[in-house]
Length: 254
Image (spheres, rainbow, N blue to C red):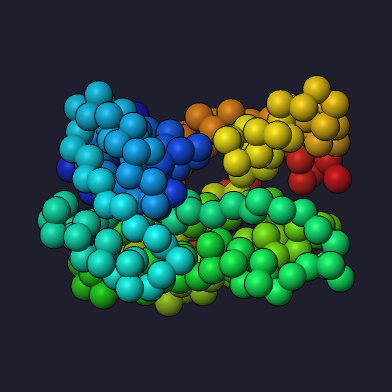
């Protein structure tokens, strides 16, 4: 179990105010890491910070809009100053709040989702590049989605942004591997978070959404914590450029 120990490690987590980001941040703390928490919602971050504190680790709350490069650069600088160094970077910010046929898609909506799901991770990785490469160590985890592994009808901006994030992961893994920095993607399937509550709480739509998956149920956000800690820790020390799919058999059942 010592392979999963993060004692002394410092982490930076975006989208940490709720959902997968919140439970992963707390899981990192339970494994021994101090955590910089980044999201737009200061109230949500405070709740996550309480969970980190309950695990006996330090939490640093950094409200920021990750779709702004200037805001990201400031957040990264603040995190390094407060933590001393950063060993684990988790790009979790993302989502989609609409479904629409491509011909009816407003291009402003396309731009918004690309910034949220892909550009935000680009900004974070770019801002951390010098720090990670000069230290010669680190684990970057990009939270993608099974939507990026195949067709995403009615959700083309989301699927394209997550596919781009997987490609970015592979490119950075090759570029940064010789320096000792690992970059992997975590690909959840349908996960019951607040962002898609209207789907999974619906007694007809919820079960129908996951009916074709092998396990025929939605994931709980907490089911992403084990894979995230694995990717962050020495348990995955020879793993980079990979896409770890945690989807209850959604993709193999298609």
